[in-house]
Image 1 (tube, rainbow, N blue to C red):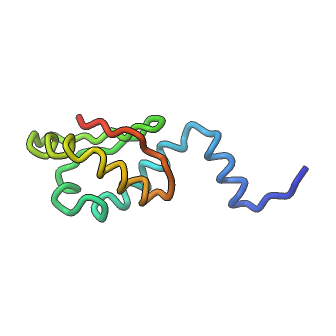
Image 2: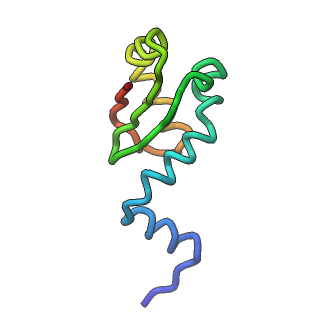
Image 3: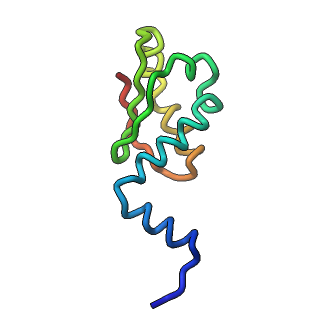
Length: 93
């Protein structure tokens, strides 16, 4: 058996675990305001990741339409914030 640091072991566990998306969703929650701005963050109800899809929930119709038009920018900004190609699709509900 090889030796691993605790950080390496946790990264390996998270890469193989189903809770990875939940942890990444928490990371996105923490930086969502910096990524999208205060107004968008204020009217975003919930963020959820399933696989490589980011689900953004909002009850404000104009914001929903704006987010649909900005999907590619959202993917780019979120992936940059998370440090890798984590999100491939954004679904706005």
